[in-house]
Length: 188
Image (cartoon, rainbow, N blue to C red; front, side, top):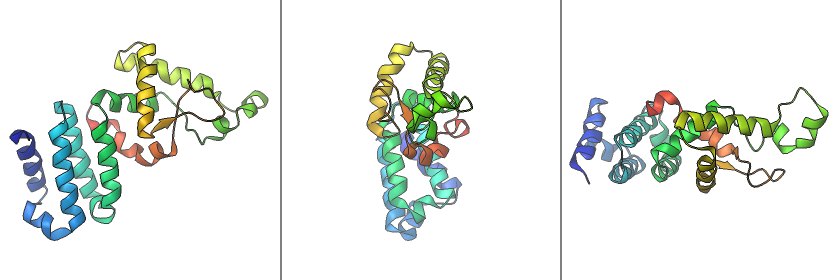
């Protein structure tokens, strides 16, 4: 592992009053989470991703998530570790652009949109979110479409059965993890 990454996380832990010996004392789940975070840092290829992983650990620690639900923390860490930094930005900007969820009523029952003008049109929401995200990330919308296909492997976005496979929506899993994709969190 790059010593700088490891030392950076360890010094960040110590600033928050946590040493490795204290981590060992806290719980096996806590120590395991420290180890998994260090392993994720080993694979991080950008300083932004390193910082994001450190912030994820600090957020998980400060909210008690690591102590209370270490498996859930490691699930989140696994998803973040698998994503490139650009993919994380894409998720953030899709959310900011208004991409709906697969379990939203107007997505699950598209025929209601035709009958009720007060409901948003999911196809239009999808297209607007794609345009907004493509602009923010500075990629062609065709490239973004391909990246969405790759992102579906995470379970954070997917197709609603009522729609063509070329239209993606956020899944309920993204709703559960959304707080970890906040702009303030990943520092852009």
